[in-house]
Image 1 (spheres, rainbow, N blue to C red):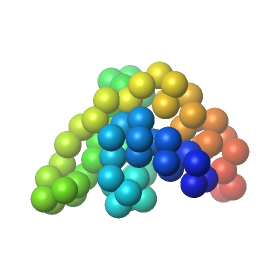
Image 2 (cartoon, rainbow, N blue to C red):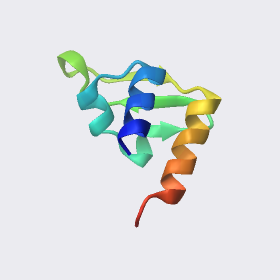
Image 3 (cartoon, one colour):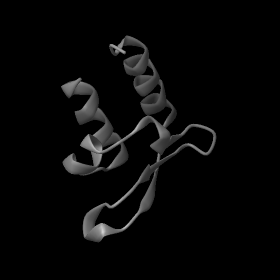
Length: 66
C-alpha cells in the first residue's frame, strides 16, 4: 500500500495529506482526472490521471481487502 500511495503522490503531483484523503469516488476514469477536495489552502482541484496510474489503482483496488 505504501508503494502505491507514493506512486500516486509522485505520478499525480499530490501532497501526502491529499493521497491519504483520496476516496474511490474521487477518481474519474472516463475524464482521466483525480478530484482533490480541500487541498492546499482549502481549495478543490482536479489533477490529471495517467493511464498507467489508473491501471495501478485498479490493480491495488482488486488486491485490497474488503
